[in-house]
Length: 144
Image (cartoon, rainbow, N blue to C red; front, side, top):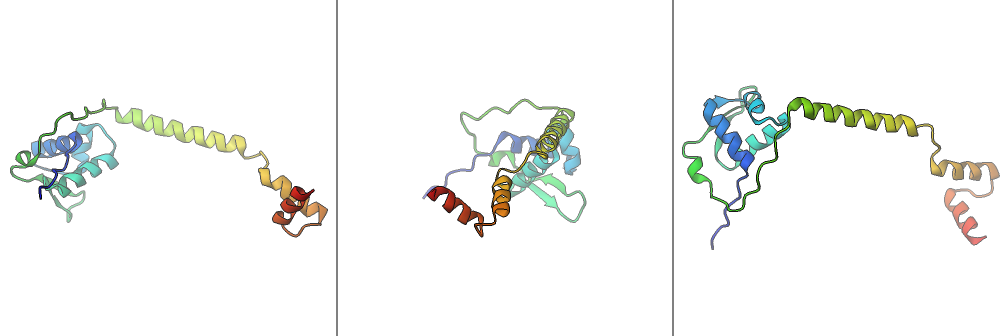
C-alpha cells in the first residue's frame, strides 16, 4: 500500500526558509518577513513542526524554532500549486479589523432601540391575561 504524500503549502515552505535564514528564531522575527498576522505565523510554524521540517524549543519564550537538516529534500514536488495571495501590510490588516469593529458597534447602537419582534406579542399576551403562555396565544390565534 502506497501512502499519498502530504501537500506542503507555499506558506509552510516560506516560514521554513525564513527560519533557516535566521538559524534559530522565534515568531516575532518571522512575522515581519512574512507580512501576515501573528496567529497565522504561529499556525505555519506549528505545521512546519508537525511535518518534521522544524524543531521547537518550548522552554524559551517566545518559542524558538530551528530547521531540520535536509528539510528541503523531504518536500514532495507538487504540480499545479496555488500561487500565494499578495501580501497585505499589517497596518492595512489592522485598519480593516478596526473598521469592521466600528461598523459592528454602529449597527448595534442603531438597532438597540428597535423593539424585539416577540416582545410585542408577549406584551399583548400579558395585557389580555387570557393565555398562560405564548404557545397558548399562538394556538388560539391560529384557531380563530
